[in-house]
Length: 284
Image 1 (cartoon, rainbow, N blue to C red):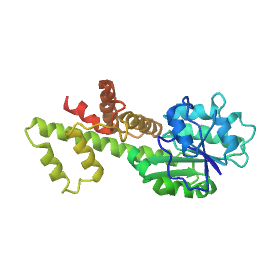
Image 2 (cartoon, one colour; image 1 turned 45 degrees about the horizontal axis):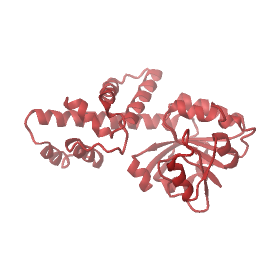
Image 3 (cartoon, rainbow, N blue to C red; image 1 turned 90 degrees about the vertical axis):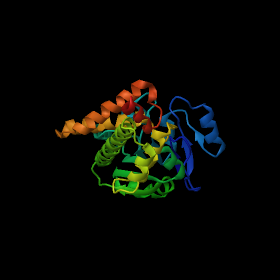
Image 4 (spheres, rainbow, N blue to C red; image 1 turned 135 degrees about the horizontal axis):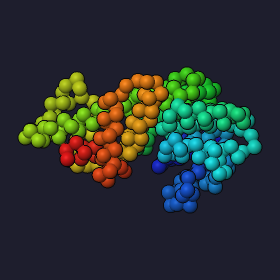
């Protein structure tokens, strides 16, 4: 089986599989060369990947890039047939984009699974992500050995396309709002003359605490913004959640405000820093 992956580092895929790699726009970069050294085969186009692979995993920047992989020049749809092929979309996308992709893939005889990722760069490197999947159940089952290499758990949320995207959006709302609240709390403590370290020590002992919030709180007070989860990715996910809210006529006032906070942090130059950099916006 040959698998196309777009990750910063190749996950711990079982040795019985062969990796076929396409990295959009930078196929001759040193990063791809590093992948090649550990056994990956470099493909020229997305179409080449799908033609050679039994199952293709796609993980790119955003919904538009995900659609370009399928509908763009030399994209997946340029393959004469997708019979017997599986396509797993791991990009953080909205339900409408996922529906567009599944119609294209299934229209040529392929199987489709949306598999949204919960986790950071560190968790990806450790193989401890959480995967939220929806779509073809047989494809989900076929991907289990790969999912187990990448994640600590994978959830099948049913055959209805969009379920995984919606679940991911809901979780990102909770995560984004929590981070913004933590940043404001730390900023308020600082302005009030309180020790931020003491605040985190107390917080760690309360029911409000979580390892993630305490870790990000430490990063905020230490101004340590090396990227584990890019701030721009969180803002993108909040925007997708707002789109879902609009489609369902569900009011999301906290999400809307949090989105504006993250947008402002991006304008301050912290788009590619860690999400903890939202503290800069709260403090100043």
